[in-house]
Image (cartoon, rainbow, N blue to C red; front, side, top):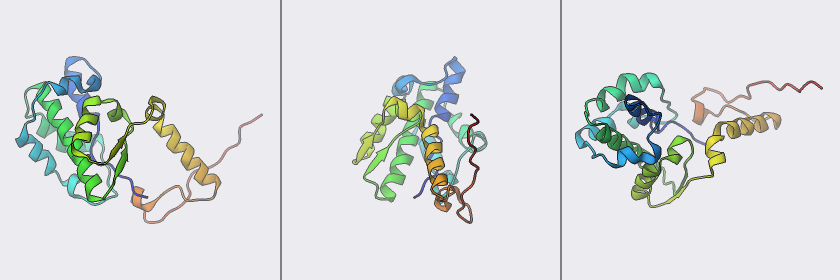
Length: 179
């Protein structure tokens, strides 16, 4: 099992549209109107994170120090969003292809961005699966249920290839509900 942050997903797109009073770019409609800034796209692809081996993780600190200073060089909101969508799709495809993955299950907010899904499907010749709204919206609850099941079966809940931990352990506690 392997899992890691490929790229920053919807966070930068959501941050960009805050400037016009929105919380997200519904279906990528604003991004669809923009043009790719290829010079900025190249700078984004050169960022160190995209060349590190897994496990690796991204946070808002990385976005603020590394990512936003690059995309903020683009003046047009539409072009900024379009470039970020293209970057996101390409980074996802790079990981899928380099790991010989033939199908991908997309969850989280990105699964609701039709334009992002279109761009991923444009580049990826394998199967792109977008689950139901319930799975998209409750992904983290499903993951915690999975970890709980592993705990109850005395299996590890930290996986080195995912967390970067030096050893695999079963962490957490189990509490029965009071009657």
